[in-house]
Image 1 (cartoon, rainbow, N blue to C red):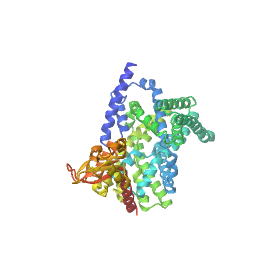
Image 2: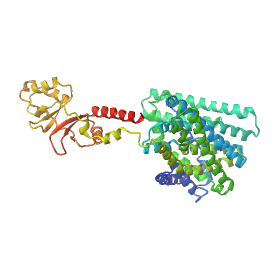
Image 3: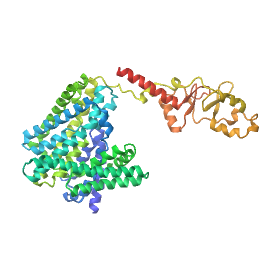
Amino acid sequence: MENVLFLIGLALVLGVFGGRIFRFFRIPQVVGYIIIGVLIGRSGFNLWPVSFTHTLSPLIQFILGLIGFLIGGELKGEVFKKYGRTIYTILISEGVAAFLFVAAAVFLLTKDLYLGLLLGAIASATDPASTVSVLWEYKSRGPLTTTLTSIVALDDALALILYGFTLVFCKSMLGKGSFSLSHSIIDPVVEIVKSCIIGGSIGYALSWVVKKSKDEDVVFSFCLGGILAVVGISLVLNLDLILSSMMMGFVLVNTVPQLSRKLFDLVKKTSEPLYVLFFIFIGAELNMAVFLKTTVIFVVLGYLVARSTGKIIGATFGAAVSKAKKAVVRWTGICLFTQGGVAIGLAMSISHSLSYMGKEGAFLGPTIVAIVAATTIVVQLLGPVLVKVGINKAGEIGRNVTEDDVMSSLKVKDVMDKDFPSIQKDATLDKIMEVIKNTDVYHYPVVSKSGDLVGVISLGELRKSFLEAQLSKLIVAEDVAELPVEVLSEEVPLISAQEIFEKRGVDFLPVVKSPGSLKITGILHSRVLRDTIHRRLVEIQTSIDS
């Protein structure tokens, strides 16, 4: 046990370090985790005996459940309702085309139907993180950007559906050894329905707990318990645990979308170390000798060519059929090459599921993982570059203006209120009241005769002075004025002013002519700042879109 704990700690530290190195080179961290696993596993320094993975099998199954739960949490109903005919047509067309092209290519190369179908299902997935990060980096906006964002949000759902049917079909055929209508169609449907019922039921029960309890610790405990229950029941009934867990997350996020947001964030944040360990475990089990086989090399090349061709042809066909804009028809396909965590996660799940299916299953699992890991490295290096090419050719780079962009282009003097009410520092309470009666603001700068800022009076603080009514002739504005928490100068960028508002928690700041000056020239309200930025942003985006 001591050795197991030591190796887990070592693996976690090395995994995090390796992931950061790969992220530096813009390669998915998950690839780094797997490579660290390979280095400490049987294909490397052999520090990770095979028996350790068997000992940690319950932990691996729980992590698979967490992954499924978090994937389900991304499948929000609003996402399905929001996108129109064009998006769904392209989505189905490119996903199915990639599936068919890869399945056919791998089958022709290996004569192995199961390998072809399973790799085809994985090939339909597109990595949303890599694609969207490029769109964000280059501030793209337009029909192609909208299409890509929509597709990658739903692509993994399609991959999971294809994965569910193909995995159950392959498992039934490997286990039964013969083909029948019942085993190939009815059994997979029944297994998927059972998985949905189990995951959906526990997900609904968890949503009830989320609605009734305000204690985050209690809700989090129920959530982990629910995932463990789903995993345990799925294993007992020989169902696919990742599908069951995915349905649990799907039901929860669509039943209580707002209340469950923090819970999903907490589960994701807490499970990150387990996620690292999971892929290290898999990497440790990889037998890199499969790469020495000519067949595997040909399969990797065939997979890459077939998947890329399927994505391009499928996306182009879907866009043309749905009468999408020219840029969407021409460039969507090359922007869908990225393949990341979901694809590798599905490969891991397949490997785990087939490990109990005899010699052929035990061979298929590691082979699929090796092929997907190798192809992921290639497409993750090439994919983001092609996304940039696509949005550049479509003329959509730099068109997504944000609120920060607007604020960076403006200064305080462009938004401040120059016609503001002020109070002379020697004004008595009676005169102060006369000013207040004729205005509808909450804060009043107190100024000297020369217009220099002395302080600020707020209505809240002024109420205290009203208690001393008999002193109304003696108290003057200077006596009740308070120094402002901060003063802005006219040339301060608006984005810096917004940061001050958020940091200080105030809604009003006086503006002076220049740094160090006391000459007040205006006032800036946080509400006015927000309204102005929003209005200008809408104007700019409308102009760009037109």
